[in-house]
Length: 117
Image 1 (cartoon, rainbow, N blue to C red):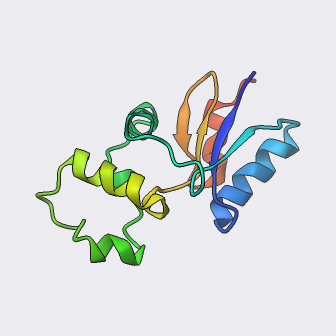
Image 2 (image 1 turned 180 degrees about the vertical axis):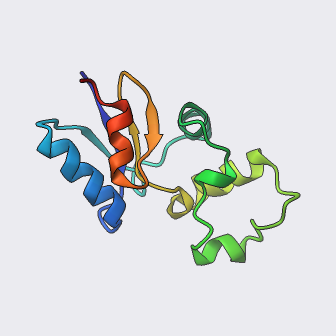
Image 3 (image 1 turned 30 degrees about the vertical axis):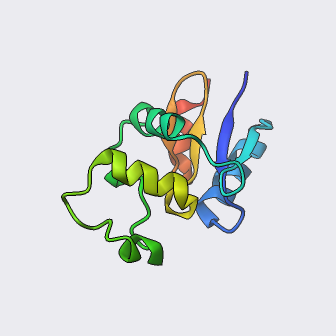
């Protein structure tokens, strides 16, 4: 069973989610998305599979969000996704993908919705 976590070691939510996986005896594939940034298509699929909108998956607290004017409601999903790929710090985290589904694990316990019994 392959489980992937889109991970940023500086993020407490990501670290907490990874800890929960490890406590369950799961060694996930760790994708350090700041280095190995997903494509726009992959990011769009992650967001869709998690049942989110693009705006729900973007980190509005990052300074680059305001610098790029991403709070403008006229910005399209494609424009937001392009900004997230160009500036991966804007990707909310951690996304976790399992055979059961995909979730943005905020809080980390959201992980349990997509772990096999």
